[in-house]
Length: 227
Image 1 (cartoon, rainbow, N blue to C red):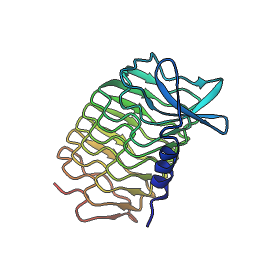
Image 2 (cartoon, rainbow, N blue to C red):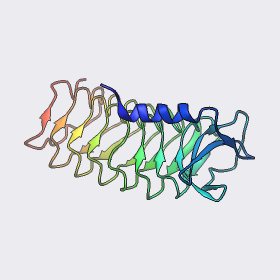
Image 3 (cartoon, rainbow, N blue to C red):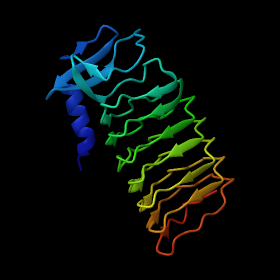
Image 4 (spheres, one colour):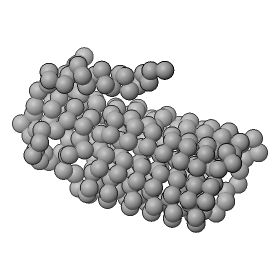
């Protein structure tokens, strides 16, 4: 079966692979329907910040910014609605991302392998997160999940070894495969009353985790808490 989301992204990038403009500080972009899609950053560029507007039009989509030299607290412009696949992965020095309140979609691996990331707050406008959103962010200590989230994706925070505690929003019905795998510092997790399923290896290797209260109707895979 075709993954429509991935197909959409790949088609979009293919369409604009060569047909793009570049800002004076190196952002590669295209304009479609009076909205700006930042698709990457020119090599050896060192912009001061992510722009909210280009050519007086709002920057709505961000992609390909893994080589953007970010550090400390990073604010994503309020105009941005979507973060595309692996947009900020492998960032070395960003410690916190402040996301806009109108953000609607975060694709797979958006913040994966961010070496210095310690904190992230997801706005309540988000109802789904991409696979492996925070995978292997070794210094991540604090995550606030969106109140309207319905599922913790597979590999969500796998390998986030500094994460100690997390509260699962009330509307979440499934915790995905290896979602918190090898979160060695995780000590406490609060599960929602309406949770329906905890997938395999969701909490595997969480050696310091206090076994949570499981809702009556929740099905737990036999290897969900595998040591």
